[in-house]
Image (cartoon, rainbow, N blue to C red; front, side, top):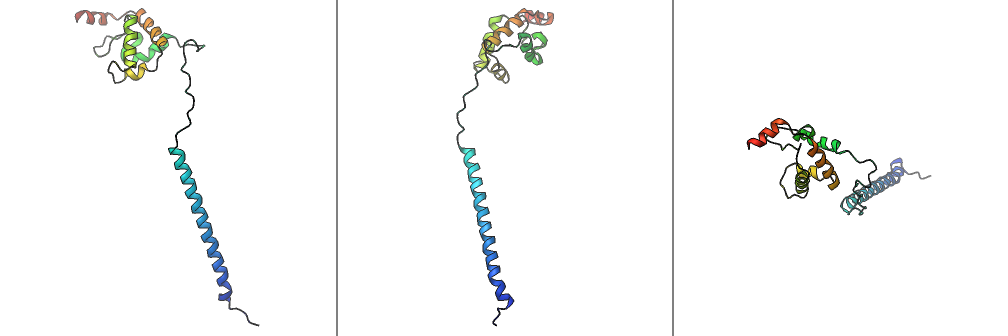
Length: 152
């Protein structure tokens, strides 16, 4: 009986194992390459144009924010209720309605240079600006602010 030596019998098994491992590596590499290509395409493909959400308007907002609450966003620089007697920031208390609205619209549209106010003004609708203007116009300016304006 002719028996193959054990090394001769193991050779086809080793070859089969190497072919299988090589095939698995090629398949894994192809899968990785496909995944990376899909991710790269997804990142560079233009996003589907989703409809822009409608900006809330006072008419469509069932619970509008009171002007006094919106005015608090100004307090850090312009003082509580716009009452600030500082030479660096304009006091808003007692400011005429049209002056406040025009100034904020100019900031929002970039007609008036600013580092921060342009961004702040973009967050308010015309109705918001009018409500805030009426709130600030009704506030009494600080005596120091009035004296400082008179000295100028």
